[in-house]
Length: 51
Image (cartoon, rainbow, N blue to C red):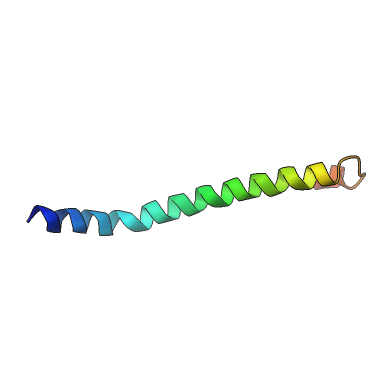
């Protein structure tokens, strides 16, 4: 009986856990790509237009 309750709890929480982990991965990837773009185009006059 305890196993069934644990399975139900995991199934109910899994969409939230997946959503939060994907949001965190997207934030990390966005930060990484932004830093990379700023390093590659350092000194360009067009960087100021992206703020």
